[in-house]
Image (cartoon, rainbow over all chains, first blue to last red; front, side):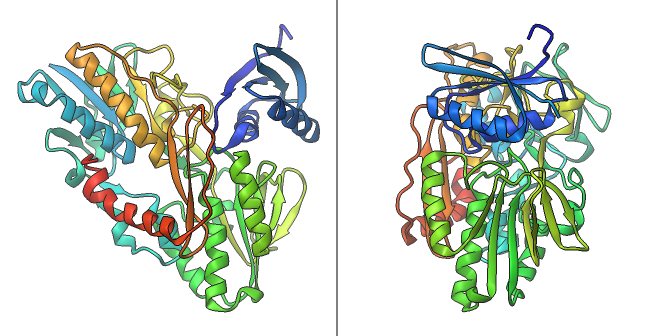
Length: 79
Length: 384
């Protein structure tokens, strides 16, 4: 984790039309293989959706933490 | 003399410049401040109108007007090479234009927008129709009106893009157009979307998924566009799915302005890293960003820029006049969503309150059209 380059951190705790997965997929599209994108989420359901999405798209979840009702996921682009 | 420079004369730049000029009218009249808008084009386009042009519901000439005519008389306007910004030097608080001149600023507003990338996806430029610029919207209407049957695919290439509800709107307008024409049974409509569902906000996704099912629209999601094969007339996704088409209506990839990247102010897609509340560019207390320009996870929509203009104009004027007191942006967004050729709904939300779209009706459709008319006379000139 210490050697992982974080391309971007997305604050997805608020409503937006692209949705958290839309923002995340865009950032991962622009990240280089081996880089990671962090996303901050405000609810459990979205976190669960992203965990399913990450598995389906082959992006590796390297961090999954929660604090004061907010979740932080870090996804590494592997291909 | 304090110089306020506004980069970009689209909807956001125009409205914010007018609001700043109104707030600094005394300072401008006394020669203590100036407000200048920079844009390569001397035309102002009402981009939300392009959707209606592509369906024959708005005349192309009604979507454009000379930029000077909607700017407050106290705002200076530079266009052509004089208004085309080639570099922003944040360290020295200046920008350079294509005519070689340098312009210093005390406060800078970035409203340089989002820009269509037709060449990012193989085959896209040759194979896809779109309504995201005026010329292509006019071309699309000719194809729609002469379409006698076959398969129409509405595809969103990638996120984010301006006017996020536009894919929903064009799909439901096409459906209704061919129903009213009496040939809907000869037209198959497929909807390809790059993330799960048909829209990113759960409430809206739920409502629209139900409407799509009732209207017989086939959904392919997630479907992230990888290529367009113009000879075989099919599109292929990164997930490996292929969909054939007779008419491909697609939302192209978007990027921020090239000058943002050239000036080291953006990420790899040239979106500017911006504080979601203050709308200040991160790391700069004299550069504000608004509208499509920012990397904020909010809708890239005209209403977003409009709501943001109240905050940015207040904060810029407060800095220039020395009155202090920063305002913050609560994340307000409002968008009509056409659900046919004579009905619509809307979404209104902010950072803390999700939208609850009402049942579609003709009232909202006519409200949408009325707003388009009022934009030039009232809104762009910031009469409201």
